[in-house]
Amino acid sequence: MLKLYCFPRSGNSREVKIVLAEKNIPFEPIDVHANKEVKESPEFKKASPKGTVPAIVDEDTYLSEAFLINQYLDEKYPSPRLMPKDASEREVIKQFVAKIDKSMVLNIGLLVIECILKSKEQQKENFKAKKRREVADAMKELDKQLEGKEYLFGDFSLADVAVTPHIAALPILGSGIPRELKNMTAWFGRIQARPSFGQSIL
Image (cartoon, rainbow, N blue to C red; front, side, top):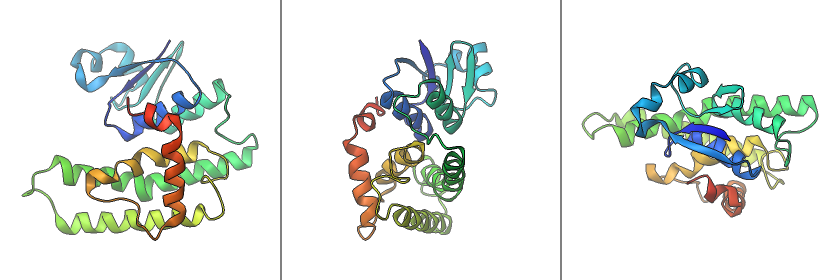
């Protein structure tokens, strides 16, 4: 059975859980942060040389980083397909994910560190305001991308997976999708209605 080294609160771990749920792939979740011995194990170190989650062990395959894992899963377990068959269309999604990782996902992660993990005295208000603006700008771009579509590239894909857990984390920052972004609001409603959304929390 596939092993998923993860951390329950990790948005990146949740990305992989969504794909596993969409494809009905059985797996064994292993919480790296709950067990120091796991983090020091040869198997985990081989799967994730940097010591980050998520990481998987699937037979003879050892792999880390959410998007790389999800591409691997989509190729090995192609039903349902979460990336286009056409190579040029796949490349567009890859570039999109790389861009959104920098413009939104990274900034949400930095806000979690600043707002949740640091004390009030350590927090920098100017930094938080700057990152919130950058996240808001990224969401406006997502709203434009969703114009006339149910999902970011028409059909549900790894692009939607790459965004979902991080948008879902906004409430813990006292934030959310602005009401005026109607395309994003409708999109997130569809995302929440998918069984994989709830299953990825477990």
